Length: 399
Image 1 (cartoon, helix red, strand yellow):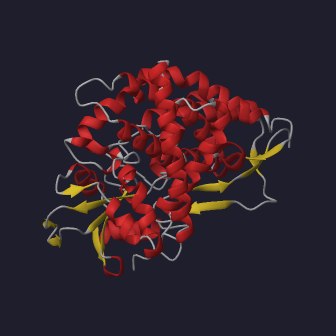
Image 2 (tube, rainbow, N blue to C red):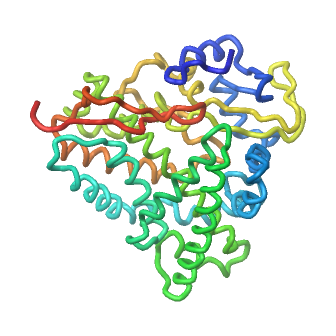
Image 3 (cartoon, rainbow, N blue to C red):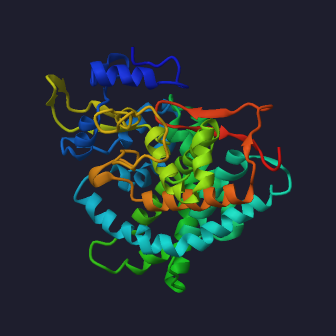
């Protein structure tokens, strides 16, 4: 059955379905699951599928909080992630200005500064939690700098992000998670509108400043669309980066032969990040909604049904990745699907990789002798759509 009893290790189940039933309907949730690389990549492009799934979140929320949720739903529905063309193409064109290679290059110094600030706090301790003390806070700090948030307000950004993640990633949706998300969304709307007003008075070249400067152009984003997609950044750009950094560290430490390769040749860090994205993607499943009935390998997917595209399975497809269950940082990077594929491919992929590269390179340089603290438990964030450590206690220094 598809309801994995052991989320800690779904890979045997994924392999079974990929090899024996690559598209599978699960009646209890009325959802299709697709496992093969070719099908997953193709369906990311398929115009018969929609990314708009906000209505499903509203319907799934407890009845007593649906009215509260509808107050902020207009902003959530403006997430580029949920839009189809022509709105998606229009929004992506303008949002890309804040995410292009030049914009990421300008952010390198701020990423390095935030990395050093967090590592300075633990440098003299000889032990720390690389996720709780570092990988969890770093992307929130970087996103704060990226958006142009005042440094004194970064802790507010952390809390907003946590509340958004708890609402969108926990099943079933709870009253508490909905109330906290609605409150945080309302606060962030007002705060971001204030920042946009500042940018109009005093232009800057941060993300919000770039978008504010384009407001007079034809087809540009409305103020509400800018605010909405600032929220999306906190949802998509926080926990995935924490998962990625934590997964790289954990996989290297439990594969000492691979860690030795990296220590001998630090240039392999790029490959280590790429291989981790393939081998243990931080986001494992992305849903789409069928816009019409269509056939897939003799099965009929009906209009309105959810189709779950399994990234974790596709990335282990032996037809595209030789010896896919081996973690090998010497592997030539391939076209994994960890950032999606096609028109909805993750706009923030370059920023995510740059954060990981700077964070991990600095971590391994500043914390020699790093190793797992075996006296403490590792806590995992693992559900059907996310994989990564919440806590990863480490020791560093001479054994």
